[in-house]
Image 1 (cartoon, rainbow, N blue to C red):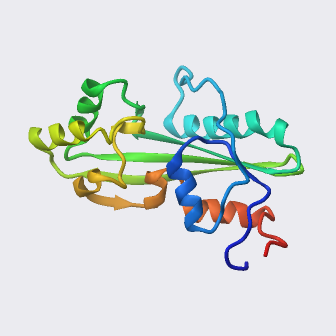
Image 2 (image 1 turned 120 degrees about the vertical axis):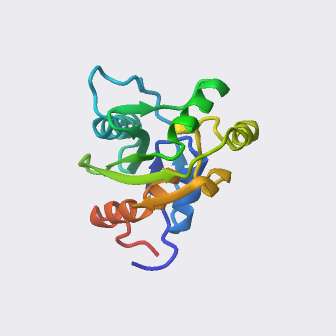
Length: 199
């Protein structure tokens, strides 16, 4: 693979600025960013890994028909502890409950990655990272809630911000917790010919 590949054929089916920044770290700039408009409601009895995969695949498939001949990359992040899923908190109270629950506990960040290729073939992958927060006192939770960093983030926190100072232990991909495993994304793109012939 040559350095700084052009990504003229890549459509990112996500509105997440974090995923755009992560792709930039591996020299990939999407030709376009087209957020997928899908119903993200969890199905009855759906397990966290199944949810992450289904949402990533659904996003990629929703955007692909309007971008024939391009690669369409989509991702989704699910934060879970056991079967319990922690979505994006609706308000400060819910974000506070999430952080209080994570205090001193390990939880999982599950990333679903899906790619639809120019020929219509598709591939997906699940990436799982274990994260443990140290015990947080009420003042620390208050501080994080006041920062507003929890807004719009699965599980109510972003590891790339102040919350990183709460992380006692992590096993697996750090970039997966941010929003997109760069190792797995690179492997999927390379394995499906995305970089072939790029300067």
